Image 1 (cartoon, helix red, strand yellow):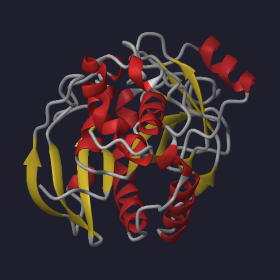
Image 2: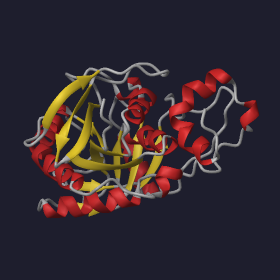
Image 3: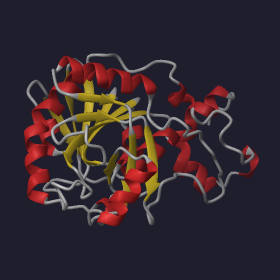
Length: 292
């Protein structure tokens, strides 16, 4: 199977976009379980691309139920060097209006019970996450949205909540007081795991509502969220397609995230854990001269 250059995570509308030449569906197994759905592999903007429906076909998987490790690990098996994500968010700022797009540059974790590392079981690694989104991909997304003529905000902090319930008003006011900009339920684990897998990652946040802090929007209605999402699908399609026109980033620090990050001595690695993590560790081992 031919390797892909880019991965894209989003809803079904993103792999039904004009110009996408789908070649096959691939169902992958990983040591961490099954991904959300079979991957749709094909060509878009002359790039080899793998699409994944984050919540599965028919949107059947809760944010807290997502197998983030299996999803990102599978992209690694497919050869993806970069992942572009698209997801709905609530706005915590007046000037981020429903219908706008935002490309965040920071994350805050408010989740409670999600697996968000590949490591453990005898191999310890501590990757840098000071800048959780790939700066190269971020810049390209901003340029691509601007080219599509859609209002876009460059930068902002994405707070990742547990869900599936939306915020209470007290929480919404608290997050605003903290200086958060948008709120969602999925991107934190994707960003962390992509960094451990040495895959560049950036997200396109689609603002669908004002959470529940706004005096004119004091509760979130899912029907309004879905309508804004539907209306924004074409904008997201155009922006992601434009971003794919750029080649995969080369020599990006994201792709060397494990350099000096694995602190467990090689001779102490348990065989079972090593074999499970081998696709992630292979580049580092080859760089050190180990070939098997």
